[in-house]
Length: 191
Image (cartoon, rainbow, N blue to C red; front, side):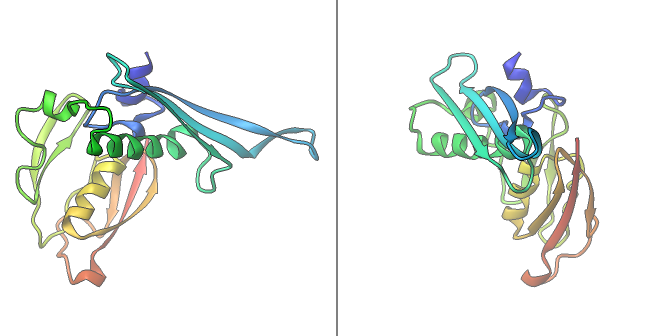
C-alpha cells in the first residue's frame, strides 16, 4: 500500500519516485494551530514525506519535514521531491552499498546517447524518444523530474507551473532552439 503512494499514477507521493531504488512512503500535511484565530490555519502547515527504501527489503527510513513551506503546503508536492533528491544523492554516493534499481530492472542504461531518453508513458510502459538538439522537445505527459532532467541535458531552462504531469508548454514542441538566452521553456503540469 505504501509503495503505491509513490508508484501509482494516482498516488500522493509520486514526486518521490526514483528510477534508482524502490520507495514506499506516506505523505503528510498538518495544519498548525493559530492561537489568535483559535483555529487550525489553512496557510501555516507542516508538509512531510516519510519513506523507506528499498521497499521490498528496507535498509533506510527517512522523514523530510518542512515547516511552513512557502510555495506549496502539500506533503506530496513540497516534501516528496526533497526526499527524492536526497535518495538519489544517497544512491549516487553508494552510501548504503546497494545496487541501484535501474541497474537491476534495465539491461541497458536509460541514457544511451546524449539526446536519447526513455520516457515513462505510465509507470509500467516505456518508449524511447530521441531529442533533436536544435528543436524544443515534446514534454507532454512527462513528470516534473523527467522534464527537468531533459531540460538540463539539452541546456534548456525549464520554468514549471503546477504539479503532476506535463500537459502544455511554451514554446511548443519542435520550435527551434536559439542561443542560450532563448533556451527557456515554460511547462504546465497537472495531476
